Length: 66
Image 1 (cartoon, rainbow, N blue to C red):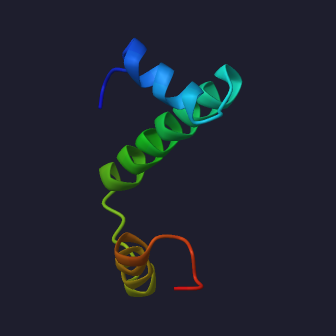
Image 2: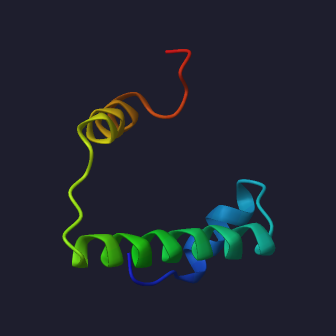
């Protein structure tokens, strides 16, 4: 999403995260957005191993115990 509303902030705080942690998460998302645009803009193709790993994470999440 391109915006965050008060209800989003309240949900984050209700889950136990602080305002600083919310700002950190927003900064990480913004950085990934920037890096992806730079990489894609230069025409860098993803390595097959990374593509496979991304599909696994998308399917199973980051918890490797599953």
